[in-house]
Length: 401
Image 1: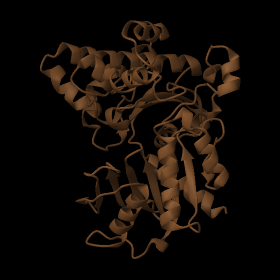
Image 2: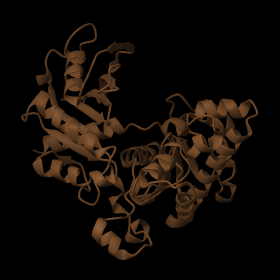
Image 3: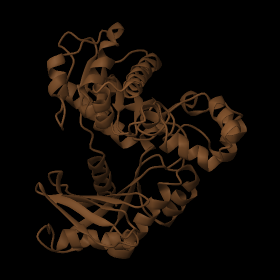
């Protein structure tokens, strides 16, 4: 069975084609700057890369370019779209409506649309992607939606209810939803596999660290708390997002600076975090290089990041009354050696012992343990694979039809 996994943004479309007989990636790529004069499609097949500049006014045209990339030219991998059995979509916000992956129908599309206010940058793009698939593939090819927040639907009320007047939860469904759930689900399950233990017997803290970051407490295979909230803005310092701050800081600055709600959103989501503190950028590689050159603000930004990660891990250890393993994943989690070292060395009260040699080599897609044999808590670097989770869910739902 071949499954196409799609992740649509407002001006982008990422795809991976899986052969689910052996769970291998046949081809992958992305359409960027959709709607712009300089839009292009790029990708790779068997390690060989390609990129073509082509005008894509909308997501339907982008899908036609994906079709062309898969079925024509030097990088073709299939003869016809009929070889694709199903399509899996990543959807950021499923709210309280969708607690598991779901076969697409009119009611599901309407539900995703209903939740657009909670994810105005993401959910409309996902709907465009689903509709574009209908235009290109037709209704006979089943589509499945896999929701970013579904894994977090097991949180208890004390974790997801915000301490504001309860009526706003009832009226507007304002609560903690969490995101990166597909990633946290994958790496927590993989952690149990690597440890050779039943996940139902484990307490795991999973740290998805990238330009967007979140940390999750996984007890017995279920999420009991996570750092992102109503939106992906909550939690701790990220590339351009501020994470949790005193709400009075925001209202004070709105009064002083005259920010509108839209301006406030832009500043907190796109101009804060590591970028806002360092003044250098949001990419960890650039900020790390600036820190190495003696940039004090870059050093401060990374110090805040390290401090907040270990502080949040500690709070989730308290929430679960213990921890068996800590997992680092995501672009920063998988590759930033000094951050992992700093976090582990400051968790000595838990009995964490870092294997410095293992930590040094564990990057660029490598998987393994970075704690010593004597460490009371195991620490792992486990590359995430959200697309594979989406493909697996899609396959299971389609086969059960």
